Amino acid sequence: MKVLQIEKYGELKDALSFTETKKPTVSTTDILIETKAASLNPIDYKLVSGGLKDMVPLDLPITIGFDVSGIILEKGEGVTGFEIGDEVYTRVPQNQMGTIAEYVAVDSMVVSKKPENISFEAAASLPLIGLTSFQALERVGLKAGDKILIHAGSGGVGSFAIQYAKAKGAYVYTTTSTKNVEWVKALGADRVIDYKKEDYKTVVSELDIVFDTLGGDYTLDAFKIIKEGGKVSSIASIPDEETAAMMGMEGYKLPENFSTLIKEKSANYKLTWMQPNGKQLDSISDMVKEDKIKAVIDTVYSFEDAIKAYLYLAEGRAKGKVIVSMS
Ligand SMILES: NC(=O)c1ccc[n+]([C@@H]2O[C@H](COP(=O)([O-])OP(=O)(O)OC[C@H]3O[C@@H](n4cnc5c(N)ncnc54)[C@H](OP(=O)(O)O)[C@@H]3O)[C@@H](O)[C@H]2O)c1
Image 1: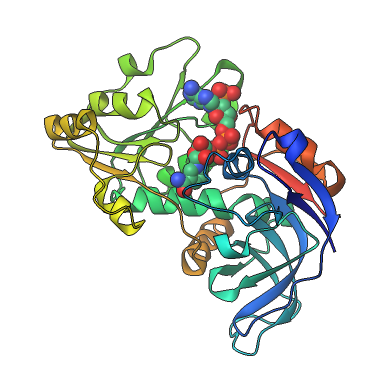
Image 2: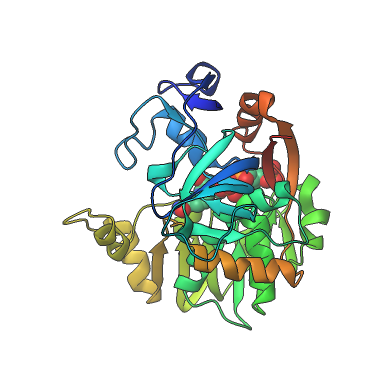
């Protein structure tokens, strides 16, 4: 089968290439998906650069990609709840990565049935960003009436998180640049802050939650704009101590500047590293069926143009998701 592989660490244009590999076989708990569409995520190009080598060591060459939608072609003897021919979607686990491929074998525990009201391209756009938003926001107890700032509302994660937080009844602030203001508003954000014209720190204060998708100073500044006892939920910064322990980072301590900021605000700081989860994806499917969440797609590329698609995503200006379609 044809796949797009990471051959070596380095720049996207040098490190990726198409090749032929064996069609995967299924273990007892796996299903084999004929890929209809896949979506791209920043973790993919971060892996290519070698920037995550310590956390996620790769046995190169390896097929790239984590999000996929398609049709079940085969299933292992132990698989229940799915039949050959079902239309499904998933974020595959690390040890089964490789969705920019004609076929994908994946443990059925992380798979959900594709909502019938959306296309394969739309379905492929949702698992990683949806599960990330779900896990990062539920972990800090997002609830109706909360005032939340979601950074980068026009990005893959941000465009999902706005809709998720609105569906939960929160009041949503978000940041984006001038060209994206109107369509981000249309996703349901209550107050869109154009970061080219306004300093978000002068617009928001006393927030219940900051959803930090940007890292760096954005994480540190989040503590200035939350209320006493507020929460900073990051997906782009350093681990909190609980997460570090879960990740096996023995003896890890938060740096002093973080501990001080947390103490000053009696804040709850969490870094979420998303995990695939079929049950949680089922609940995202329900929200999609109820029209509470819509897929936000920037561009659909052909399989042959998947490297171009990665080069575009890595520019960091995508408006929603970048998709590769197999058809
Ligand atoms: N920990 C985890 O499990 C996890 C999971 C998913 C993602 N992530 C990380 O989260 C980050 C976001 O992921 P993503 O998929 O949403 O990325 P993305 O889709 O590539 O984000 C692109 C968007 O970011 C916006 N943006 C860039 N700089 C901005 C700024 N200073 N202020 C406001 N918006 C800004 C851009 O809008 P403009 O053009 O308007 O600036 C663009 O629409 C990545 O670093 C990714 O690796 C982590």
